[in-house]
Length: 226
Length: 226
DNA sequence: ATTAAAATAACGGACGTTCGTCCTTTTTTT
DNA sequence: AAAAAAAGGACGAACGTCCGTTATTTTAAT
Image (cartoon, rainbow over all chains, first blue to last red; front, side, top):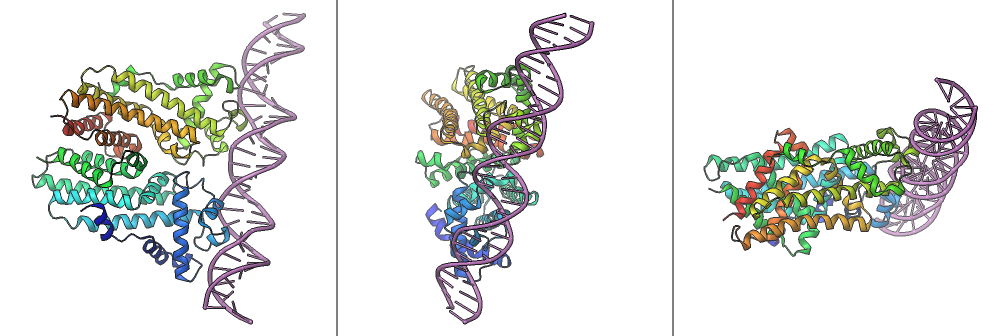
């Protein structure tokens, strides 16, 4: 699997994401026509992620968002209850998609090695397709209200648990070396995160997403394969 | 070298750091008595890093800082020109220390392998000793004014260049395998950053700084050593 | 050693701005 | 014409900063 195949396989269009947000928040969105909602949610989320790649969500004002999205301040408040709820909206939807796609992709593999490769590729490809979203989640995590912060951490540990389980399975089947599993999973996660946190660097150096994924797989195989 | 040895070797006490800041900013600090300045700069920087581990610098108000540092708002403005200059003060001092310590530590090694090990250890140990500082720099980088942002990126690339040079030297001397150097240095940097960005995780899992450093060295040797 | 004077440090009220949000008015759609 | 959506003026709260005042420390004079 390469990135272009992944994108075809997984539908993560903005329309679909906004549609899901609408479903999950029907009662707090005051506008009734679904087309309108989806059209404007896309504008709002795009503008938010764009602004927040340059400054923090806290530092983004509703006036900034109004200017960037093309909607008036009043109109914005027809799509979310308040600024904090907008943040939660975006984060929770991102988590939902990420966990779902990752789980269903890994299920396609049979052997631990195959699963490990699939987990690495689908995580990197997913973060490529939703880069601003991943970046946003990472960077805003620490300034969240307590329960939202807890959910973010849970989601992170959940992802890492997936890696740990795969590696443990490989060790049990004597396909992988008996390495420190916690540390192996941790550094894997670190490498995966670097892709979406340092996109500017890899872009400048002309490293493609497929190159990067292959290299990370190579690193993990170097330390794990017998 | 283990962490406790490193700490003895490198003096990075708060007093010393504040003293250096005073030296470099004598004309913009209105308080004359050096003891007072150092005492209060420590309070100010500690409070800033503490608050900014929970919210962004932009979101921190001078009133927050006043409450946390124990100095009045008026007094604070005797130690820095304005809020933005406080940010620059902290960041530039952090860069200065990090670059200096890293360079002088690596110089102690002779072979590429020795240098690589020293580079990894000193980076991790340094970020352990100045964790809040490193975290702060990473997280605030994107909301900086243009030239300060440029300096942060330069510093990051400078660090990475050190790794690239060491690996290239190892390849030339046929001690290291002919790997993709850029990618090897990148994932190394990613692993190093994870230590100070995810301290909470490693703390919970009882991974010591020495354990982590050894594991990162192990990973790099796995992919590089012939 | 006391006291008076000067210098320095800290304080916190107040100002102009900008913030998130509300609410009435205008525009667009049906 | 009625209903829905968007607009943007208005408001109180909170912001960074300034600056007149008070408190403390140091110096000079007795």
